[in-house]
Length: 191
Length: 244
Image (cartoon, rainbow over all chains, first blue to last red; front, side, top):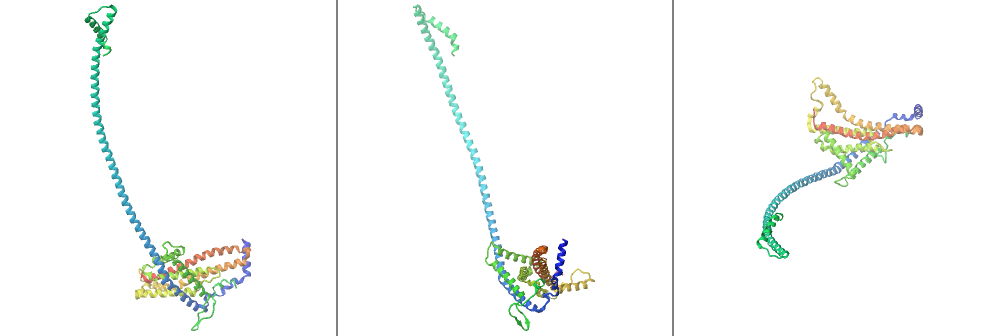
């Protein structure tokens, strides 16, 4: 660093004309003051007129147009937003109504169905009961009849067996009594 | 001679000598760079307003940003009454800004580094603002020198100070811009001269200074244009809205 500064000082010592400039400021030489004033006023006037009359109104109108366009677009967007919101609300209302309707229909139809099923079931049950009791009666009848038949057949069989074995014709009433006796003992097994 | 840091500010004639009523009005390099700066502004605005697009392209966006920037500056400092003066302040801001920026190009000339240029602009603003003040408020405009709420003993002193401060407005306005531009460009030149004289061995340090200073000078170029315009707005505000 020290060698750098000595280099700087040595160079400045050689180039003394670097500071000779302080001798004069060209700005303070009045030779061209009038010229500079004249050209400044001329050029600035031209610049001012062309900017004021031509460019600024153009920029301003463009900025205004853009602002107006943005405002219009935002207004439109807000309008559409409101519209869509009302439509959406309508749609939601419709949806809710439809849901209610569906539930009502469901409940109603369920009730009707239940009722229908209940009545049909009752009718069916009654019919079935009737059928069962009728069948029961028939069975009882058949049983009773079959008992008498069995007794008669048994008597016949018994008398014919006795006839074949002993060759005697037995008293019909005694055979009947014997068969009745046997069947009374065993009837409980079948009835 | 090339290493003279003030060389860059010298004005010389271009083309034939123009003399009107014994006054030398020749076209100079200063005039040339005024024309170049003004042409850049007009070209920029032409490109920025060529197509009216709802979604702007880059140049149009920048032109509109300048417009809103200056418009906001005026409405913030001088209120809505200053609207008729918007084109003037916009032109002034653009002119000073472009002169400063064109001056940052190598081998170019900085128009605003001449006291006569800045003084004429400042004097014009000063005289115009004073005329506007008297036109709007008549002799009541003089009340700008008499602030309210000051003790009676201090009033003469304050009034004298106010008058001096009012009269020094054109000086401070012009010298601020001129001195900033001149100092910055002189510094750049001096450090540039160091780079050459110290050579490959020692030139790196001043070179890095030069690079940093260039960035700073671009900032100053913008800032001084902004300050010039905003001070104009403040002076205009004093003339349009009497606060005292």
